[in-house]
View (cartoon, rainbow, N blue to C red):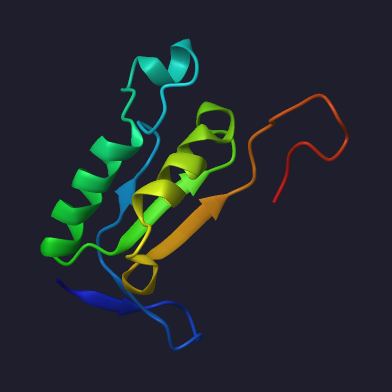
Length: 101
């Protein structure tokens, strides 16, 4: 796997990441992409790690936070081997602070 420096942080990240939008399938929009449960997610993460992909992308808006919950369950015992990036830009509610980075 090719690694790249993450800005000036010194952190090296894989050139490829794995998106977790299919984890959960919490509503019709995300069900159209998939509805991977925590067992399926754990298998996918193992395949990724076996091939050098250790960066996983998520967002609080993916299935109403369910994707992040499933990701957390799926990486149990592997947390020291993975990097997680997340987005907080999408609206997740009606409140004044329910969106934004």
